[in-house]
Length: 180
Image (cartoon, rainbow, N blue to C red; front, side):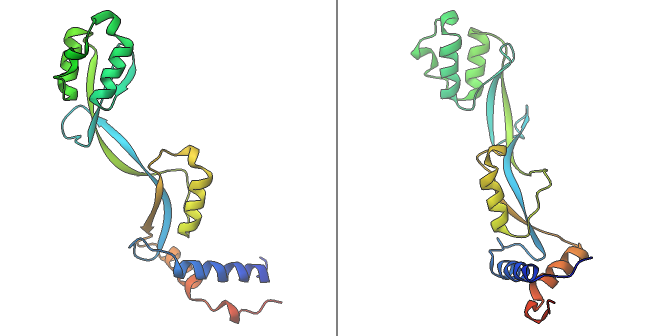
């Protein structure tokens, strides 16, 4: 064991101030911060209602998320085979009608896959006592995350040890601790 140094006490004072003055994002104490981002969960039925994408199983390739993206893909990839012109695509207003058209006129391997967007806590072991530190981690490591990454406050519910440590950090009078 070691004794607390003046630097330790100064660190604890700064941490205490930050814990007491930071945003809580409406989360109850004891709170901690994690990294969260939106991710798609795919399925083939309409229970997945946040959106859809089209895939080509023959090309083993993502085609697009919108009718316009799919049409651009088809023009770049298949127009030399199917000789489609702009008028052929005009009435194709949904991904389903576009997939039906493509399966009939181009190739029968186009699939519409539906998705829901879900918040996922990144399972990289990152847990932060302060929102600022979590934001700094995201800023320095953005290349690990997609463009929906953000901080998320959560409660350490029924975690008496964590609650006690935060209670000490937030309420201890560090001025009273004598450093030798």
